[in-house]
Amino acid sequence: MDASALGAWQALLADELEQPYFRALEERLAQAERGAEVYPPAGRRFRAFTATPPEAVRAVILGQDPYHGPGQADGLAFSVGAGTKLPPSLRNIFRELAADTGDECACGDLGAWAAQGVLLLNCALTVEAGKAGSHAALGWHTFTDRVIARTTELPQPIAFILWGAFAQQKAVLAGRSPYPRLILCSAHPSPLSAYRGFFGSRPFSRVNDFLRAHGEASINWKTDGGACGMP
Image: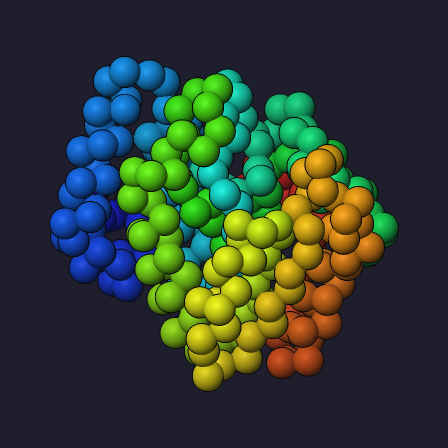
């Protein structure tokens, strides 16, 4: 992988690209691509990094892996391209956002969040078409754990939003920082679990309360209008 694909994260992560596990990951991914369709497209796989440089990070939302349906995965966790039908989890995220802040959203491209400092990071950055979790063992988790670790070293206040048991496994890692941190854990927004603690968790207003308490501006969580489709 060309390190320039990481944008401003290159300086923090360049050493990882030289590690044996990452070389093996590249080989496994190339082999997977020879045998099946892989999402998201190569040019979008590191969108989370280019859209939200390290000095801009104010919140982190962790996903497990990209959407595995055609035309869905766009390189940002939980996000889909403008005009794409909203997946069930994203519909529930927007439902909770409306209940929490009153903001109604219909556009699934979360680029507007990323542009305001929300790192939308999937723990596996690729997936085989039609097979959820199929690239979990390629080595991505080692890489994204290092990303989380580097994020904890950033000096600015950062909120971590951890939805579901998988993301919550990263809570200890995310909390290892001497700087202001907020760790929010709740059920996943999937229809299978949203009623078990996701609805009513109010993550969006709680993040903004945390940011304001540390002298930072609030995040505008709306995605529609001119903001929809930002990088």
